[in-house]
Length: 375
Image (cartoon, rainbow, N blue to C red; front, side, top):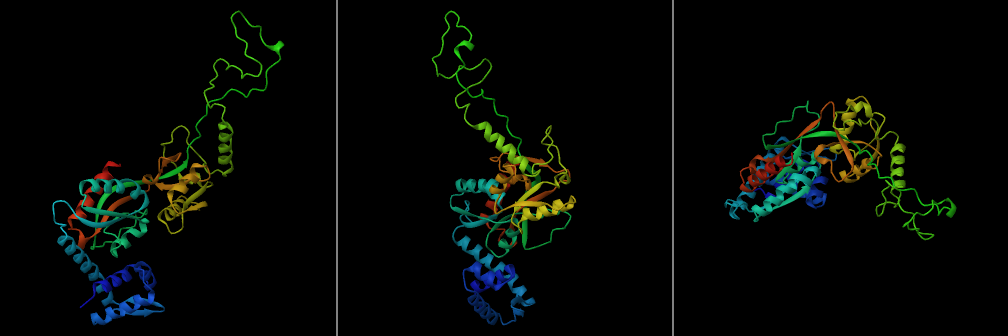
């Protein structure tokens, strides 16, 4: 009889590629994983693996069993869910949504909030993943629903995978993110340089009041001196302007008349750029889009998440490309559409073998509703 736990290790090997990666995912030692896979090979009565240097590669029989392993594990999960009452009118149980950052922060979180109210017996966990990680995580069973996005190169046909079902959620356009124009500050009255000599003051008229020596001067007509108007805000604004100027054209060409007008990326060839770390979806996007526009981006900032990246742009130190969903309105930046549009299709993916579970259907319906509301 084939052991379900060892079948999961086999499915993980097919997805992750190496014994070491399987060991890290399962919190085991590589030697333990290798031993258990050897036991599974004896249980199956077929040759499942072959050595390729120091790596363990699946044979054709191994690939076949790994494909069936995922279906078997899903059927076992479905059976457990039905026994626990997952066929009741209100979904029950527990499942995990794997989602990339900008989706997790917006409509995915809204969907989980909705389910928390409408299906209180269903526990939904969220796991943040890079878009390139969502489908592999779904295939190996690390999540039950994967909110994912297709690659930015829409000319490349998506591979057909009959084991994965996709539900369309939204179309997300890529935008150029630049520092927002500085907000003009109200002019404060010039600092008081001392009380002028008495002789220089105009004579006091009848009923006029002469302030005592050392008192602050009265505001001049037409000058606003609200409370706090003399705080050192103007020097800070000057410093910000100096920072933007020192960025070497980071905020480069800007259409002051219409920030909604499409831009040519080629106009930003001399700008400094920021991105997420190499290997991430956005880093690959920036490299691909800039090369398509005829230049290599001068990357001056690399970050692990969108927050520091947007703060870098906000400070006038760089520009970047982001999906519109990722532009956090808390940062003072400007998002401009591209003259040559780039977009990604966001979908919710599930394993075909688990698609009939009522809890999965409830999550998909909630994601469709909240994604539509966020457009």
